[in-house]
Length: 462
Image (cartoon, rainbow, N blue to C red; front, side):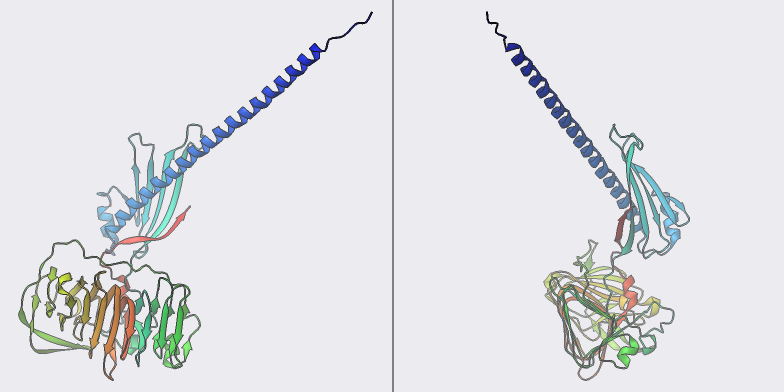
């Protein structure tokens, strides 16, 4: 008799084992997936909260910038202190602090600190804080701190600056600098106060081309990245002893190709403008060193005797009386703004202060477009909007003032065989020079700004 054993029990046992193992694998996979999803969800939550805290910090920085921009033109800490409370800031010496809550529950807030030890570069430190995700503990909040320094925007930072090509192809061309705000300033430019900050710079969008020719540049020459500088055999660039020697070539350390400056466009400010007054006769004075000489009466198309904001709809001669702070808006319909005389009367602190917005296509300045206020270039400033694409200076006399025309091609010609002194600064799209010019950059122009606004100069997260 033969007995047969059934294999069914073994088969059932293998299926059960495989099912159990498969379930374990699926369970582990599901747990891993859920763990991954949970980790990713927490990471996203924390990232969102992290980003939110920076937004709160930036809100504090904007608050601080608004606070300091009330006093961009005030070099007096008392003005900051006297109004700090009204602006909900706490003053302690030269440090100002505020904390702002951005929700009703006071869970989202920032604390900002401002110090104006140096009015030129005030510092801001701000910490923004927000509640962390519910699963986050110790700390239960997320905070980020940013430290920035601020500075006022500078329109005039060189004797001559341009976005594109600068060609100094005249004869007897030279640059240097001086500071009309210094205690040793005698009221006019002299060789005794010369400094070597008469920089010539170009910041072309693709390539800056700077042709020095035989000029003597008492300062630095700069181009944008990849720019080229050409200098003739008798050209000299460097400090005062170097160019006075004269030493041909560029002194080591006085050239670079890393200029990267944003030339902001000019816009006519939104002010209450009125038409400039009409014709009148006024005496005209000639300023030479410390001597002021009256000439015969001169017929002006516009005689302005009160501070204010005036529109100009012609190209006639303009007289601005002493002690007047005046803004002029040359309307687009003028076409070419070319007064023979734009005269600012007065001397010293009584000199007229004129800011002229040229909103027409062309501007031509002549020999008498200069104030008589002790040789202060900041008393006669011309600003060209994008509508002004051509700027010319021609004549046989000196010029004291500043020109900012970032969209205009600048052409200088005239002078005959004599040397013309151009005291101040020019910023234009390009420069083409024919003539005999000595550029004297007034370093006091670095403090001149029509908006007196602080902007961020550096940003660092702590």
